[in-house]
Length: 267
Image 1 (cartoon, helix red, strand yellow):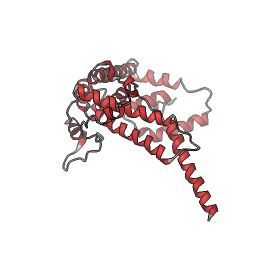
Image 2 (spheres, rainbow, N blue to C red; image 1 turned 180 degrees about the vertical axis):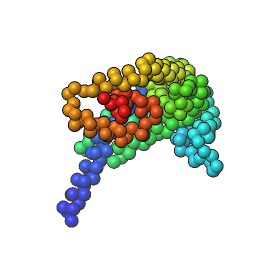
Image 3 (cartoon, rainbow, N blue to C red; image 1 turned 90 degrees about the vertical axis):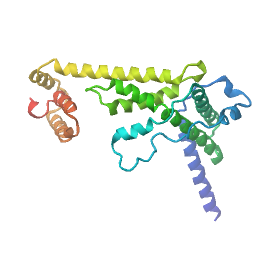
Image 4 (cartoon, one colour; image 1 turned 120 degrees about the horizontal axis):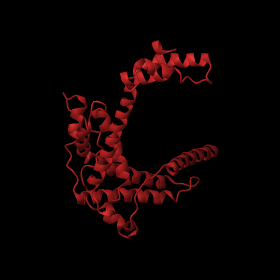
């Protein structure tokens, strides 16, 4: 019985050590502020009142009879836009929670860690995620308004919307509320600049493949075959590409065929 108890304790400590190492390897990005060191910072920041439901932006149940991404997006855009005061409250809370999580994490010893220590850090990070999701949810309308203006035949609404969400999340992590600027202004420039760059790059891609006639384009593509690759290896690669190329759209298929001289274009 004693042996079993010791083995159980060892397994439990290994489990805790694994959790600790995972936390130590996790990046916690936050913008520090001098007010975080105040004696009353925790009560002032965390007890400053709730804003919104702190519900994740994508966990809403789709109403019966609705279909398509447009219905989902329209629901997401129903959230009220944050005021300047609300932005400050949420960003201060977000960064303080990460600051505290990082502070507690810096004191971790994977070999002697307790479950309470790990639970505290994970709970702080979870609360920070909820605040981050609330900021994202309340700025969905901004993403949609920008994407609608930027959508072209070369870049779809869904593609730009997805990129806009990722850009907004990065902007949330890097925004310094203490500088006095509105986050909505900061996010607008970040999302717009990314969208315009993507559209410009896509147009360059399309222009590049329109410059040469198809026959010459395919001939030049055949010339790029790797001279270091043997015939058997090249044939095997071509077969694999031919098997999976149907999963690509027309433009992507043209690019792959041009690059690897597949099918009737192969020399």
